[in-house]
Length: 166
Image (cartoon, rainbow, N blue to C red; front, side, top):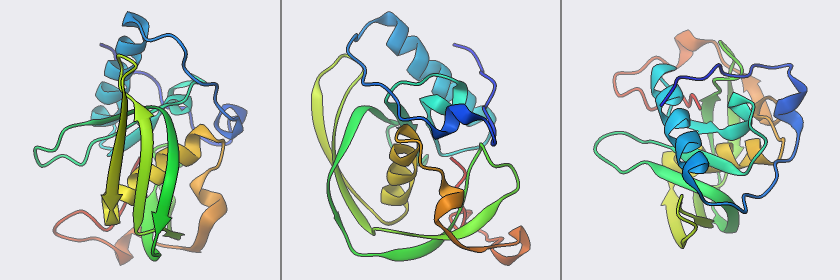
């Protein structure tokens, strides 16, 4: 495992649609492990492969608190519902935070690192993180969805769940 350099805006890598993964091997496992280590070192809760320079449809979300790491290979959104506006940040946009509207609920289909298919439903903050990461795989950046830029002093909280650093 290795900590990789996080690609920051305005890199054109971040604006490209990623290719589907068709080989489920040790290299993919190493990528997922490196992504997790990189995300933890950067104090994030999610990371997409293009954020470390890999243009493949792979992303992770780790909500912490003993929850398992969500590894998404070739994720597809199959349903969304509701709507909420919350503050987000992004590891590829250091220091930028903004209010972003996203669905409250999401259902996805994705593959595990071994290629097996799974379905996942999530709500609230977890749904937001999943959708943020899937946007990265499509070359969609959160700054294009910001309704209002937020100064970090506006959302400091005890529980730390008022911001999203992917």
